[in-house]
Image (cartoon, rainbow, N blue to C red):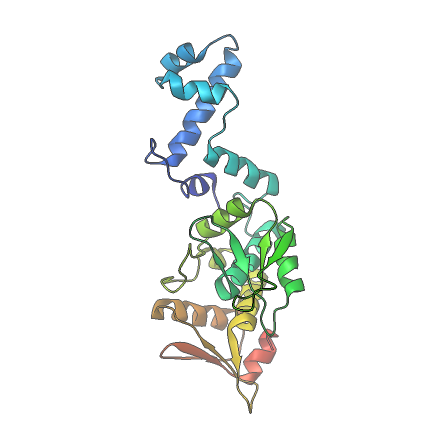
Length: 258
């Protein structure tokens, strides 16, 4: 299950390596060779591994490539290749739902941010981040023209990159064509939780009834995927038309998304 070390590494760009995962592998080769030959200098290591001595020198002098550092951080948090039925996977999928429905991942820094809504408060969002091992801080709380958001205090870029490998949009969400594949890989309770979170963020109320309407600026394929998810996790019906989904009151109650 995503995120994998390879996918995380490939969220980076590199001037030398077209595939940043190859940089991770070369770094590991250098460390393994140096451990086996502790007296070998950069020239010997470079010749043995067919790598430039200038590149080897930095890695022997405690320099760590960004993709390697990110992988190590993700391993420490347990984010890489989680088993679909474990708590980490469920926590990541819940956080993914919050980001898709009520947040974003910044284009430049990969920082995940989630804003509260009428039915999703700051405490719930804070708990979603804490569930994957990250404390949060509030930003824009005093900015009248910008939404209050919660963002990670630490390891924000690594967590954001992990969420992107899971299917979160990097930057503009409106082009996201499908629900993330990982939603279908986790057990039914985690899929249901994802659906609940999404509907509570995005569901619009009618003035005279408990029916909810999800109206999002997404391709039709994304809307259809969301309909399939709702059909999968509840017995009640939902209907799809141009640009949105209507969820009858009894289905809303069954989903416990009021």
